[in-house]
Image (cartoon, rainbow, N blue to C red; front, side, top):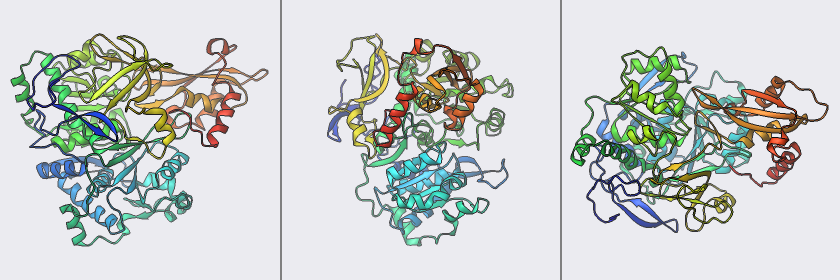
Length: 597
């Protein structure tokens, strides 16, 4: 590939797109491929691509100031169905005010501030505020247990913790414990007066804080005191789901997170070329703004990279309106789709699948785009979407789009130009040939910088040449497309390792052996099922075992079915699912020897 020219030349091979110029540079001591900082063939770019979130957010606000950016539920204790709409400018102004409060309390470039909650206008405002300051946002997974939240906060040690009312109720009573672990004050962006006294005592409402001086706000807007903020600065820390141990913090740079600004249009452009369009036609389509503001139902949480590095970034790049929900409900989703004229549907495949199957969706409703990922979609989903909406283009978040995806719905697709992917032998680490099945390794400037505050995991995951061991098994076919056979339970986008479930269930001393498996589900893709062998002399009903697991597992990991076998170990081998082995593993974890994600 020519990495010096800035001319976009179409190429239909999977290993050389030619749509974006790529160059090599040394990042974090490793040679990696990066997109050159030039405008891609899309209407979202003026001259240069944003190098940081701050740049993206300011430019998006400048271009789309009066457009509605978010339709969101109003925080409780408001009426459950009460909603509000904010424009790009309103979000920016409120974010500036919050950023001013943080700066006057000592927050500066590179500091960490935690952000916890479900999708809401206030979550967006808080995230924008952090990025205007060049802060490293610690994005708490709102589905985790209070114990896991304490772990994530203690691991990262943020100066402040900004949360919604629900999370305030969970971690507010733990404020003293968090303080002892180096975590700063907890602030809530909504009222906490309806919460228990213990929660109120540990949380302060942001509305009660003294506003920042006008000059402080002007300085932030102007970009003063932002020395050191650049493309490879820390942007945010997201968290793994947590399997046999507590979640790990995944640190991403601005460069890594914002690569979607070029990757997304590239996927679309390549699909159009593959569908017979000429380069001139593709360029015209990609540079022609839609006749009306696009609207997207954002059902995936923003603390996941699926939504943040996909939908949220697209909002500010293209002026898209996002519609949030208080919690997922198919009938409510359809009502919001119709009320807001949603034409773009995305998130995890379960969201798209459930809307497609809903009898409430008007028969004549038209979607023009689908984009999903984070979980294995049903094989027939792409074909079903094209059959009902022939003019729409289904796409995986990173990988296939259009006819290529429809023809290979079980494949992931080709790597991006900035990515290198290889398959290696699990034992020798030798690179395997085409269709050789082994460990998937990836390298590129959109990879994580590393696990935060976890050098042991970094050594185990990223080698000296920058190759990241994904922990997944797969192969690459003759077309250069990646395939990942299912080896993990993925429930609606939540990764659930079998070991996570097995570990918990095996703590019941009545168990002799436990195996967790994926159970197919038409809506969520997969659910958790468990098979057990009882210890000699034990009599336990499947429902009792499920109840035991439910009390100890996070919601997505809870099994929906349990089958008791007489001799399960004949099929599984004795093993990590044996309770005695699991208790030894628990001891190792308590000594700080973390298991695999």
